[in-house]
Length: 207
Image 1 (cartoon, rainbow, N blue to C red):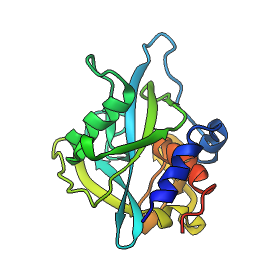
Image 2: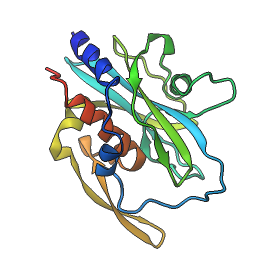
Image 3: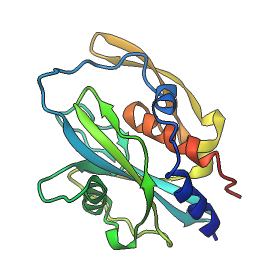
């Protein structure tokens, strides 16, 4: 049903990407500094598309609470590069299998978006985009994932679901653009990556 759309999307990933301009649209008005002496850590995340209820969905996760910069946040499945991973695409697939239980062999990779540096954790993240031909059978990793969240792509494309929100972190107060499909709060690096992905999608007639 979505064969033409996926073929067009694959071609768009071969062209010049929106990159930093799309990232800036959803960037908080304050981004934490990081120690320049610290070693950058590579990571891969997966934007997975799949058909459900006659439309395309993607999947995010709500991370469990832990002592770390991204505790409790909504993010894409994925994680840090490990020795033995041949590529960051492989990292994204391996981590996605661990976190949401998908079969990497059933993921058809369409391409990659622009890598994004996350100052607060010093991660350098490469997003890969892929699709499942059927509805995935998700299985949550209870240690890392509090909740698996399936989101219709149409909700993310709806401009009414993009707004600003104030955040507080200790004494720090700042404003950040957010996506709020179904009253979720998607912000920070995840929103910045999502912004570029949606800019690419908008170039294609989805219907």
